[in-house]
Length: 358
Image (cartoon, rainbow, N blue to C red):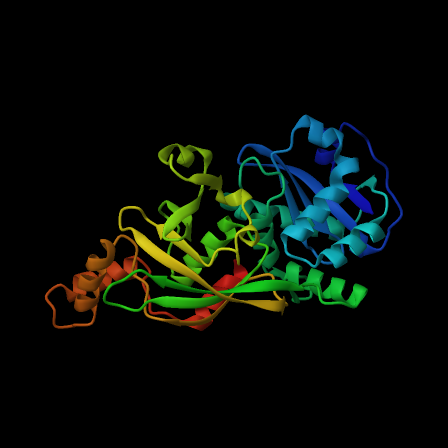
């Protein structure tokens, strides 16, 4: 494997590199050191596909061991993208020993610069205390690049297709959990059925539910695993959130895989916005083998989700009564407010587009 390093990265590595002979572009990467959110970040861009891997919050010791650990970082990033472990192991094996060189190809340097720009665009998705940034990397790799010849490239799709052609097996081969998620309403049916990759975290599931119900991720949330009508485990966003609970087993959602709890447990409760208190009852219906995607797919659904800050369940009932009655004295004001909240009717095609881009 060849890693072509910019002058900035060479300075961080405290080495001076020479040019190297070109290798198979699939096993070659360009790398640069930049600052994002005031932290040292390395962006790796695959020479053949533009597929990016973002390494965040690197310390002096990480740069010192860079050549020895880069293969491990690439392997973990690919696994985090839910690429079939068989392909990942073959790819890392075929990469061989890591060799560092200085950059020389202007075309590839240009692609690296675009990769760094994409990483910076998605800085809000970076997670502290985690070198590998799967969410920000996935966002960057879903980005569209237009080349000089006006061809359009999605780096992730090109990387997946190239791996499939190289190794002759599907790049994704996992199990999916089929969930039915419904808002806990007395008077309305609002629900979604979704296929979710088995090996994601509860943080990933949070983002999926946000898109399923058109939430805007602007409030707190947590998950509860329910066993015999009691909370068996609770998953929270941060260590600070753990201080508010004392009776249950409490874990960080970003470090907890749903596969460790499902299908052992059949019911979860996802609560979003502790003021409006939107309770989503998550029921596990079955498992789907040989799932060939690394993203969730909405299979069915009914009912429109409430807009943010509508005032809870009964505030939503009042909202619906007004928005469906153009002659109501508050109709114009309510419709304008709904528009400002980006409220819209459930559209499964739109939801699935967002889930794929998640």
